[in-house]
Amino acid sequence: MKPTRPKIGLALSGGAARGIAHIGALKVLEEHDFPIDFIAGTSMGSIVAGAYASGMKIGLLEEIALSIRWRDASKVSFSKLAIMSINPLEEMLRRIMPISDFAKMRIPLAIVTADVQTGQAVVFTKGDAVKAIRISCSVPGFFAPSIDEQGRMLVDGGIVQNLPVDAVLALGAEKVIGIDVNSGIEMPSHPANIFQLLMQSYMIIGRGSAAFQASHADLIVEPKTGRIRVDELEKAKELIAAGEAAMLKALPTAKALLENC
Image (spheres, rainbow, N blue to C red):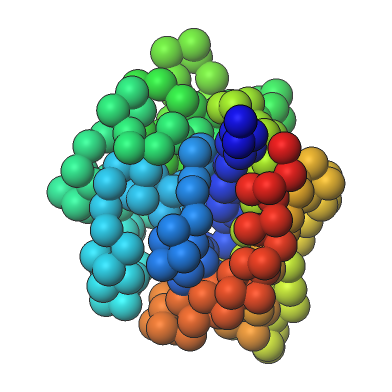
């Protein structure tokens, strides 16, 4: 009797614009009929993971990535806890995602957020996935935190688990492929504005937790995105190509995981 292959989980890291590289990696996996049984995402990785799990086609994801700009996902809105509103992102996701209920996802999905009071990861696997994605992308200081039903103040999951390996293992994955778009965090030049400065700082802070999470994965794929700043959405074509190249290089190792029962 032929042995059953291991269940494969995919963990997509945060990384702001660099997270667009995840689309290229998914594109290669799909082209090679590589099975994905579970998927988890943090921050920008949560957008790609959620959209893909909901049934969006890779071609449409790529098309959106090539045209989207920050003004499409956020707007200035000062408050005591933030300077921007992320409402446009939520509205866009509700328009483009075929479904938003975790229970109806094509691929079982986990979205990582952070409890800013305790410093613990809060992982969503039930309820409204779009709401969870919104929280996972709520960078502290830029976007207002959300208060959940338990009274927890939740923000971007990247500050506690930027590479969500444990989250996808908890879903039931037996082998995990982590895609880390922040393996090279060196910026090509000094930060030129507050957004670049704070995002680079968050990337540095997240390296420790990402390294710990990576130790739990069976394969880490690292697209070469370090030369691209975290705010350069206009570099989407390069980022998608970087994701494709990295996954193609890792594909033989990934396929070997399917045989390791």
